[in-house]
Every structure is written in C-alpha cells, then in structure tokens.
Amino acid sequence: MKMNEARMPVLVGCGQITDRRGPADASSPVGLMAEAARRAAIDSGPGEAMLKAIDTVVAVELIVDSPETGSGARGMYKNVPQTVCNLLQIDPPTKFYTRSGGNTPQMLVNRFSQDIAQGRTGTVLLTGAEALKSMIGRLKQGLPMNGWSDDPGGEPELLGDFRPPVTEHERDFGLHLPSTCYPLFENALRGKNGWSLEEHRRRLGELFQRYCEVAAENPLSWFPALHTAQEIATPSDTNRYVGFPYTKYLNSVIQTNQGAALILTSLARARELGVSEDRMVYLHGCGDANDIWNVTDRVNFHSSPAIRAIGEQAFAMAGKTVEDMDFFDIYSCFPSAVQIACDELGIALDDPRGLTVTGGLPYFGGPGNNYVMHSIATMMDRLREKPGTFGLLNANGWFVTKHALGIYSTTPLQRPWQREDPASYQQSILNQDHPSFTEDPEGPARVETYTVLHTRKGVERGLIVGRLEDGTRFLAETPSTSEVLQNLMQRDALGMRGTVSKLDGKNIFIPV
Image 1 (cartoon, rainbow, N blue to C red):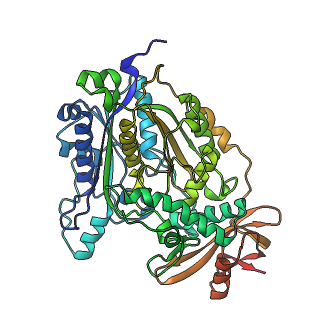
Image 2 (tube, rainbow, N blue to C red):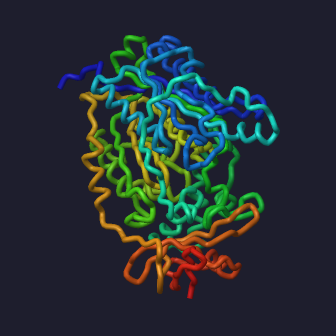
Image 3 (cartoon, rainbow, N blue to C red):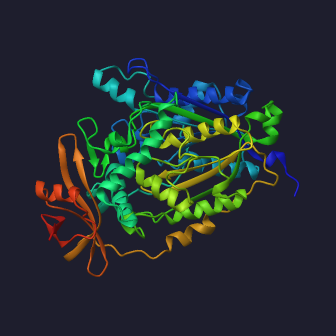
C-alpha cells in the first residue's frame, strides 16, 4: 500500500530544561513549559515557523492540580495550555489539559499519532513541567508568588481518565501515596523470586546503581551524584527508610524544576516546513492499557497483564522483538515498577544495553506526570546519534495501573501508520480472575504482602495485604509496637499467620 505522507506521524522536535536556580530566580512551571517548547521548535529546525504551524497544544497536568494531592495551590493557573500559548505568542484552535498519570506523555504521542494518521490533527505541541522545588522554596522563604498564577480566560478541553485512583477504603490505609503502595509490590516480588532479605537488598542496590550511573553522566539530571549499590539500598542517617524495603534513594524525587516538550506532525508538513530528515523520529509501535484499576482487586502484586499486552501489541505493530532494541527506558519511580515491566517485556535486569537513557526518576528526577516527556526527548537524541537504531520505553501511571509503550527509530516506516484499537485488548485484561475483597475481615489470616512505613522521625506503622482462610483479600495495619514492626523488617513476613479483626474502627492484623 502506498504511503500517504500527509498521514504519516513523525516527531520532529524535542526540548528539555532543568532549572537549578534558587527559588527567587527559578522559573514557574508554565515558564518551563514554554521554554521547553521553544527549545523543541529550535531543535526541529524551523524554529518560530514551527511554533506558528502548531494547531494543537497539550499541557500535562501539574501535580498541584491533581485532586488527590489536596493541594491548596490547585487551580493557581486557571487554563494552563492557554497561559503557555500566551507565553509563546501563539493561538492554536485546539488546547488540552490532561489528567494525572505518569503514562500521560507516551499516551499522548500514541493518541495524537493516530489523529495525524486519520487526518484529524496537523501539528501538535506536547509540553509539561514541574517546579515544586522552587514553589516550596518560595513558600518557605516567604517570597511573593507573583507570576505563579494566571487566569487568561476560557477553559481547556480535558483529556484522560478521570476515575479516582483508589477507593475510599484504600485511601484510609494510605494507598493513594505511591511511597506506601509500591513497597507492597516489592515485597511480593521478593516472594515470587525466592530471595532472602539480604539478597533482595543487594539486588535493589545493584539495579538502581545502574540507573544512578547514567544520571551521573546526564547534564540534565537533578541529582547527578554517583552512589554505590550499598549506599542506595542501606538505610543510614542520610538515606532513611520510607516504606520498607525502600530507602530514600530508591524513591522517585518529585521536588525538581524540570520541563520537556515534543513536537509531532505529519511527514508532509515536516518537509513543507523544511525539517531535515536527520531530525525525524518515527513511532514504529505502541500500546495503551490499564491493569485492573484498584490495587486491592489485582490478580497479584508481582505482575502486570497490561504491560504484557501492550508489549505484544507494540512489537507486533513494529515488526520487531525485544532483541532488536538498542536502547531502553524502563519507568523507574520505584524498583518494583522496573522489575514488573522487565519481567513482562522479557528484559533482563542486568541487560548490557542498560535500562535507562536518562538516569531514572530517583536520580534524573521525577517531575510529576511529565517524566516520560523527558525520556522520549532523550530517546530521540540517542536515536539521532545512531541512525537506524531502535529504542523502547514504557510509561506507568498511578500504581502499576495505567500503561503506555512506544518503540521509536529514525528509520522511516514503509507502510501506513496504524495501531490496534486499545479497546480490542483492554477488556480481556480486566476479565482476569482475581481474589474477592472485604473491607471487614474477621478471623484467621495470613500475610500476602506488606510494608513498614516510616516518617522522618522513625518507624510509623505496619501495613499488610492479607488473605482470610477462604482466600478473600483484605487490608489491615499491625500493632504499632517496636517488637512487631522490627520483626516485620528483620524476618520474612510473607505468609505469616495471625488473626484479623476490627479494633476501634480499623482492621488490625495480630501476628501469631
């Protein structure tokens, strides 16, 4: 079939910025979005002409605008994409503002590539940023917040999945916090792999040391310092536990000042604007899917049927296998996210090709919902440096909940661009058998997975996902005595027996 260049999507520009200036001088998040967009336009070649050609602007949601954060700064920018357009002095007819989720940037590339392939969109600017470090710094120093709010009029069209990420019951136990939820996956993975506590700690350090080494060489990294595997995984005065077995160095860092942007258009439009062939990067394969939405309803806590499905879809669409990839960026908010994705995609954790092009969310930086905009931009640069190579990256939203994947190359596609409708494989993921759940457990039980949560002051509470004798799943806390909490961290508590009941309105699991 003859290729229609007007229906062939292609990425032509990328821009990134890391603003390390102090709170008094650093840019606002919308300022970072606009600057990243300018850099993407320059990167594409035409510069200002490319900005003027944009007909669709999509801004990734700021963390403070997510209802789940309960931030008092929510809505400080009444219409984020319009404010960005005003800063860029452009006024395209279509403007979107997205819902939260780390899957968002890749989902946007997939969705708007399809729009271009179907002739519904021409040239799209995708941009996002966070400036939480500066915002918090300004508040602490009592600096005025002038320039950190705007009401340009109008309302953007909203884009994304607007379901709450957790149930009220899950929220009561803190599962709306990634730092609470991901350690539950991690301890389940340890059980699946049969690792001892010490072997597990060693493997976590070795896994994220590889990410840290890449970040140390990346000039855009928020934390370019190099840490050893032992330093990363061992608790210390500067590296406290957050949610056992995760230390601070194993957690994504959201307080950064970073922005990134991409420009996506058709091959015909790119050539019309004078974009050089060596700037063009093509999306060869992609996929989007959700796992069973609520964490307490999952099949288990160590796998992702959705990642497996979108991997199969993306490789089939690209006509490639994992062995054909030259670069990876595996989403790394926490080690469990990396391990689950690698397991489902068939990538070894010690793959010599490496698992990141940026350095990952704990070291490069985790600017809210926009990290993957950075990983796509960095992947574009790597592929341009080595024309003809291929790169794969995945994106993860909420709690191994929402997923997107992309396979990229400078190699032009020799066929019309067409992806499988995600709805065609989504329902089969949701239909998988999974345990029933109760909010009111009572009786003999065992631990399915668990964590011990810490604050800056020290150990706080034990949290378990348990099973009753009939297999029904439940959430509970443990007694907050030092003996119980230390025991959970010093021995393997997976499968631990006990009893669960409601005390003072809260589910409490008492180990035997």
